Length: 146
Image (cartoon, rainbow, N blue to C red; front, side, top):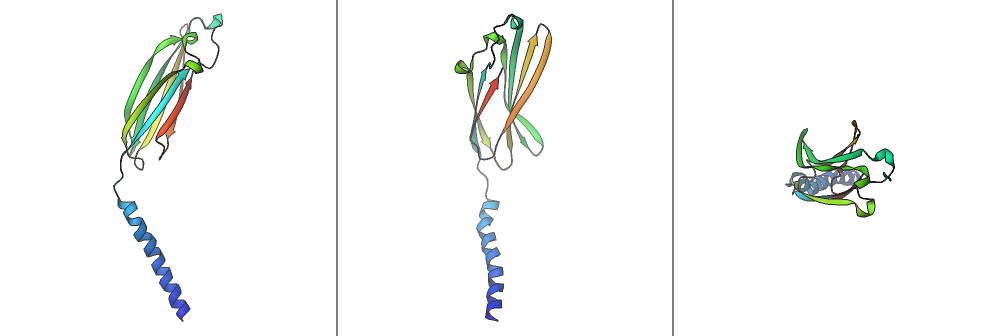
């Protein structure tokens, strides 16, 4: 009989203790965090051949957050159009760091999208790519290859 009463008490006390411990975590106000997104733009191919003389590219980078199915653009930049052979190599890549402030990790998702637009004598092609800045990650690095 004592064993049954002990098991019942443990069965009731253990979930209560766990719930009581997690209660402040569940209902506490989340603090906003700052995140840092660094990206580099460089060519990863040799574009010195004559076929690329008229080829150029531009890069459009967008940082946005999503909360409750609403998308908000936080930062955006369209980089100048350059001939492919004029883009720096990865050793001399163009680098930029963007600080994004006041992100609520549990409620908001942070995304980085970039669109590379290639133009070769009027023939235009766009390639879109991007990544998510995961919850708990405060620094994200992104390499944009032309």
